[in-house]
Length: 191
Image (tube, rainbow, N blue to C red):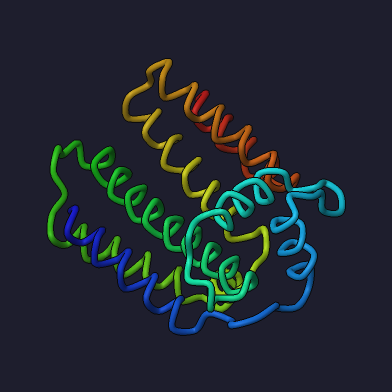
């Protein structure tokens, strides 16, 4: 399972890096890059989590030949790759719950891996993986909330519930539309 996850992470990230936009993409990207660089405030709702993580990322010692835009685009590719990995883990966890098994089969790994790679290659997911936008981080937080919710269903502990609430709160600090995704997860976990 771990080996498949490592291969999935490496393959997805390499594909995104190979197609990474070298400069500023369209839309809100220019504003989001400048705001992260200057640790400012973007247009409402402000995207504080995206800005803070972007600013912290830009403080790391990355090659100086990389533009600030390229560095921010690289961060988004990382968010997207992590979202695919959490999606993969969620599928495996669902399979364990459904079958009652402690271990997953080779078929489970193959199907979950193919589903995850398919998601990573969809045009919308790819678009937000190679340029700066808030959606890649949103996808990561949604996949993390999905994984946490499924984990709560498997092991309904207070710590799982607190983790889910924390992820939901983080999601709301990234993009206000997160509430649309969060409420069904909360209802599902309550049932």
